[in-house]
Amino acid sequence: MPSTTLPETLFDLSGRVVVITGAAGLLGRQHVEAVAAFGGHPVVLDIDGDAAVALAASTNTAHDANAIGLATDITDEASVERACAATLDHYGRIDALVNNAANNPKVEDGLDARATRLEHFSLDTWSADLAVGLTGAFLCAKHFGQAIFETSEVGSIINISSDLGLVAPDQRLYAKPGVADGDQPVKPVTYSVTKAGIIGLTRYLSTYWTRDGKVVVRCNAICPGGIANGQDEGFVNELEDRIPLGRMARPHELRGILTLLLSSASSYANGSVIAVDGGRSCW
Image 1 (cartoon, rainbow, N blue to C red):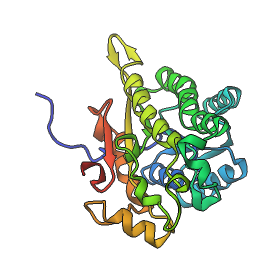
Image 2: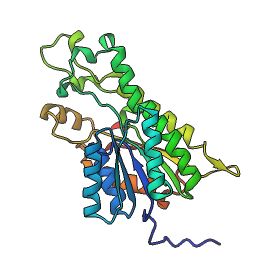
Image 3: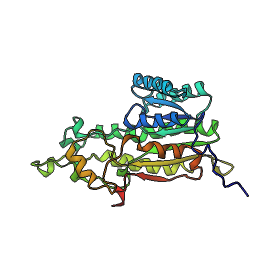
Image 4: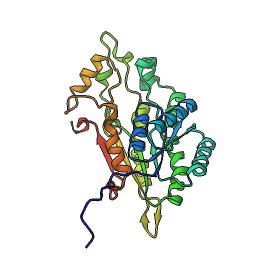
């Protein structure tokens, strides 16, 4: 009989090379910290190369992480190929990929409210959002995923979706008083489409890389709810009324689930789609 004793290294990522896209963003930084804190080597990919290099350097100062930062445009296949080659050249292998990068356009960031609406939504914006959120994830899976298959014995891919990949956005959250219905801002269609597509990609990849008929690269998806980041108080109050836990997520609260899915603690989890949204998608 196999031992049922849990190993002390259950959540250990020591020496594992973990590629993280969109790593210099709000959640990307949390993913980098989680990997480094549990002994892994984060590969910090971001379109802002200076930010990627700086984050890798600060991570190495805080942890014995051997992180590297690479300027990478995940919508450009040649850029992804260069980043993959540079990673393999530096470490000799790749163990995991976190597909985190995505566009998340917001009215409060200067987006024209009327332009968020489906009837006015531009094809250029549609194409740009899907290029980052879906095409970029596909390209990274194509190159980094294959490298994981060829070089690692404990391969894992995590795709970052959203609770809005599971349920429709409640557009009442974005409504402005005194604005005509046809001019009200909404959560753009591309966010829902991209995040639902990420779930489909997850299920496809979860059965793809096999050896002797058995999957050797696991793939799972995380669906976070709203992350507190200085949003408008009225919006926050409305959103928190729709969350069973009564609050938005704190940025660090994905570290645990990310570490779980990267580590041997989740060795039997594959093709899973895990909501981390305070229960919002239950209502």
